Length: 144
Image: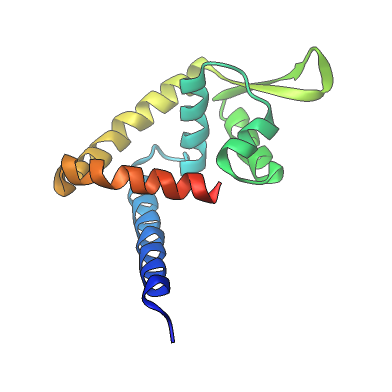
C-alpha cells in the first residue's frame, strides 16, 4: 500500500512528465522545419550567455551526455548556426559560439514559440504560474 506522501509524489511527477511531453509536442510543431527542441535550447543558451562554451560545459548545463551534446552540436554546425573552434590555450578542447545565422534562427524560433508559451500563461493565469514557479525551481535545485 502506498502512503499519502508517496501517492502525492507519484501524482506530482506524473503531472510533470505529462506536461513535459505535451509542451515538447506543441513546441516541436511550431519550431522551424529541421530545428529540434534541443537545437533551439542550445542556440538560446548561447545567445543568452553571449560567450563561448566548451561542449562539456554545454552537456553539463543541459544534463545530457557529452555524446548527445556532440551530436546536437554537429547538426547545428552543419546548419551553420554555430562555430566550433579549437581552444588556443588547450588544443584538446573546443569552443562553441553562436553564429549570426544561429542568432537569426533562434530569433525566428522565439517568434514562433513565444505565442504558444504566452497562450499557456494567459490560459492558466499569471498569478497561478507565479505561484508554481518557486515549487518547480525548488524541485529542479533538489534534483540537480
